[in-house]
Amino acid sequence: MSVDLHRWQRDESRPGAREAWRDAALRVIAPSLVLFGVIVSVGWLIMGPLAGLQGESAVNRELQGGPSRSTVWETTTGIWSRIGNTEIIIATCVVVCAILLWRTRQWWYSIVPAIAISIQATVFVIAAWIVARPRPEVEKLDPAPPTSSYPSGHVGASTALYLTFAFMAQRIERTWLRRLVTTVCLLVPLLVSYARLYRGMHHLSDVLLGLVNGVVCALLAWHWLRRRRD
Image (tube, rainbow, N blue to C red):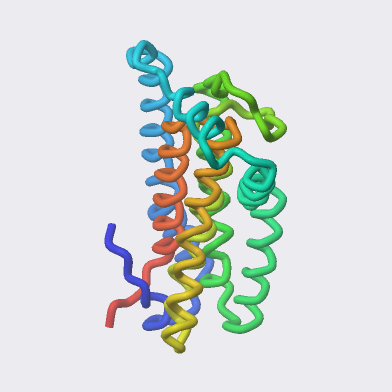
């Protein structure tokens, strides 16, 4: 799926209720079922045929035992990790969606970030329950949420939300500001990913599939409504 960064600006027409529901079903819900199947299948492979290849806890131990280990670094990664917390993701999404609705008066555009994190969360929660992968056998620097290790919900949520913000940032007219906002938005999921590994909360494959989940959900949300190309 190619990313048409200006699709919402070229066609600002208001969709009808029937059109919106149809497009959401065909362009978001149906593809997300395929995404869910892929993530669960990979999880079963990791827990089953590929179980003998697991040695990913070594990555966490290497990060925790490296030269960067310090109280300051633990505090820093703690902040990065909290960016992906559910309450922070939801609060950030609500605030940004409200601002977008106020500025554009286009509800169909304003809900794009909400669609991204909603689909991501649904795929993540059900997949985590089905796969039920234990967390790494290392020191855990964060409280363990009730969900299992695979895939990473923190990484998936931050990727889905901030990648969507990066797409939206292309409307910014000032070049330096557009580039700055885009860079920050793309950097956030990477910081969250590193923090979750460093803090012993996820295996490397959990983080990678969390990134896949977030990226795909952001793309589905961005293209949820058909827009004219002319």
